[in-house]
Length: 276
Image (cartoon, rainbow, N blue to C red):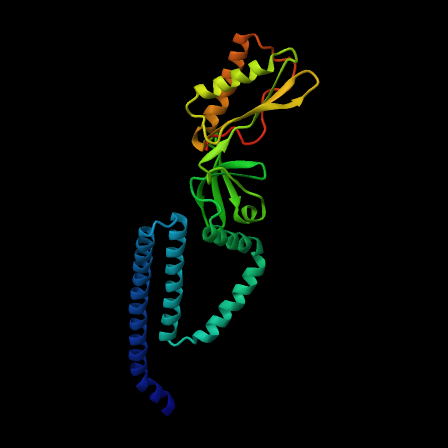
């Protein structure tokens, strides 16, 4: 009975102490969460002034906020008397189990970090890989979002982009258009070449340096095949590709130069029918 009365006598003191700890923990939590948001905005503003990639800036700022929030919770738990050492042990054990269950997601996460750090492509670049092509809209931690030329959205796991061969059409300012087409064996080859040169010279979008390459590439079964390889600015690729084929066909018709039929269609040897 005496022990019980002693406990009752000390109870108000214990409640006061515990109440003060709770109040201090709440204050620390509010301050910590507030500081984490301020740190995120400040870091985002500082990195933005350095002209860094938007994806990298957001990733660094969000990561800093998450780290500060975790530190805040650990401090708050210690303030209310919870042993953070054992708590961290539990978190580590749970993290290991979750990590084993989410190996694919963690692979995408690590791939996302690599894409952000090394930046083989950036937002706005036109890329192709594994038969898929599109403009990069956003690089997230787990996936990358692409928009196709016909305005479809493609969500690609980051691990795919790390493990596959990726063609980036936007890193170079100039591209070469590679065409191959055939004329009849009876055609005057010098005249054909002269017409091609005239057509190329009439298009201001075709660069003079590097100079276009024009020449016979094959003596096929029913045609003499020419290779035409002009250089253009990357943004003019699609327009020049389509216009050049149409103009050449019309000029050959006007000059009476026969294009054997049936034959393989005029085809693009390299590149894609996409405007980058």
